[in-house]
Amino acid sequence: MGNVYLALIHHPVLNREGGVVTSSVTSLDLHDLARVGRTYGASGVFVVHPSAPQRAFVERVIGHFTQGPGRALHPQRGETLEFLEVLPSLDALIEDVERKESKGPRLIATTARRMPGAVGYGEFRELVRETDAPHVILFGTSWGLADEVLEMSDVVLLPVEAEAHTGFNHLSVRGAAAIVMDRIFGKRDV
Image (tube, rainbow, N blue to C red; front, side):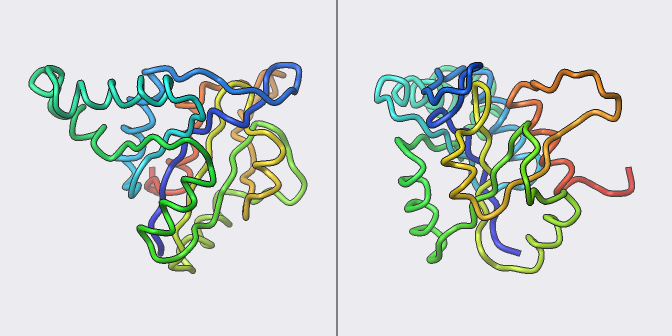
């Protein structure tokens, strides 16, 4: 099995009308996605944002807890945020993983929309175990990943859906990431 990374994508993502936009970073997403990655053994967590000021904000949050006063107050949070990296684009992420792994990653898209050819979690679990290729699981902010990201992905996972059909399916990205990672890498006997 190859290494698995998580990526929080802020561009290109969709707004509520389906237009392609860039969303803002929230510090809760940073902390929670890093925690999910660490809990389930991810090799790293990326935050992708094209805006230099937004990337600087991410770096300030990381620095506060890894080297600043937050380190003494919350040492475990600092240890968790140490493997969070911020990059300007999905292309930069692909290049970074390829440099680290000496091979290009397989991109795994998540979406709340039902997509033709989407793969279930059990099937994907087997795909991950059968290859030594690195995998990057992409999570979109706002209203989800833009179609161009879904189209360039090697695999699109089935959406996280409740058994009860409530007509509502708009989880926070951090909630969806926790569920997705548990379905793939969680204990199956629970």
